[in-house]
Amino acid sequence: VLTLSTSTSGVVAWTNPGRTFIDTEIAVQTRQVSAPNDNAYGLICRYIDDENFYIFLVSGDGYYAIGKYESGVSQIQYLTGSDPNFFVQSDAINTGIATNLLRVTCQGNQLSLTVNGISVATVIDNTFTSGDIGVATSTFETGRVVIEFDNLTVTTP
Image (spheres, rainbow, N blue to C red):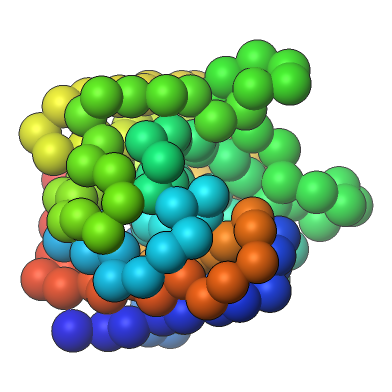
């Protein structure tokens, strides 16, 4: 089990294994261990460096998002939702202190997020074609969020 935690609002903490993949399917069992529920945690694919990667997030209050960090752009660019609601609510997400199975597919220009066996989002983006994978967590309010990641698998279609 890998545990990530943060208490700095709006800052994403992540870790990567230091590998390079082109097309991948990543699955992981996540468990929110502590509140606050206004958080974000999930998977990264096509990580090039600290400023260039895709991120797939769910939250303890039942929302999801697919986004990308790209050099030259000061904030995350959300590929799901619409202004100002970049995170989208989904009943597929177990909320609060709970476990969620996340599956991310990064194949060609198609990026997909499945939560607990239910497909919640697929977007098209051509920015990144290869890179590392990773896990990430963040909080949007005061308090330390703790997320456990277990049984991570990576397959290449």
